[in-house]
Image (tube, rainbow, N blue to C red; front, top):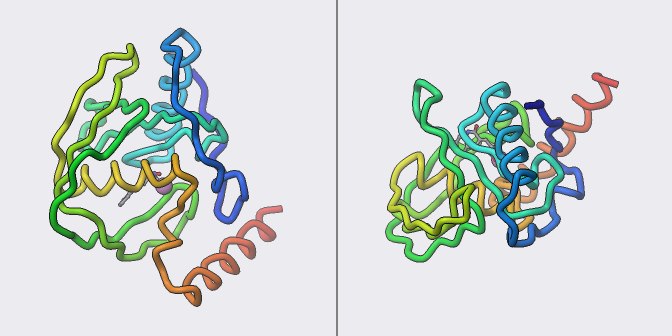
Length: 167
Ligand code: GNR
Ligand code: NI
């Protein structure tokens, strides 16, 4: 297992659209294991392959307290969404920024697991928010794009300053 470097907003590679997974092999299982390790180490409650510069439709999520409920979503699709909720979101690709975003309250998602078995899952609350946030990453969308342009440019400036200070 290995920790993978996470791309930071506004890295243009975060805007790439992920392609569906067609082969469920050892390579995919190793990507999933490395993404899980990277997410737990960060720490975060979700990670999309896009964030580690792999442009395939792979998501890992664990919203449990004890880090024992890893959920894997390959080629996920939201097939139903109901209601709205507002949640203060953060993102490992936008470190230190937390902003309120509107999402569906309840969703049904269809996906494959790491072995290629199709399942559907009903989710609400934080899990539903996280799934929507991760599916956005696979489409090349970062949560800050829901914010005003003024907020977006302030966030860009702040992260670019952070990067300069680290260099
Ligand atoms: O760790 C994360 N926390 C979080 C909190 C509220 C809404 C969404 C998230 S996802 C985020 C990890 C991440 O960046 N996933 O792409
Ligand atoms: Ni994110």
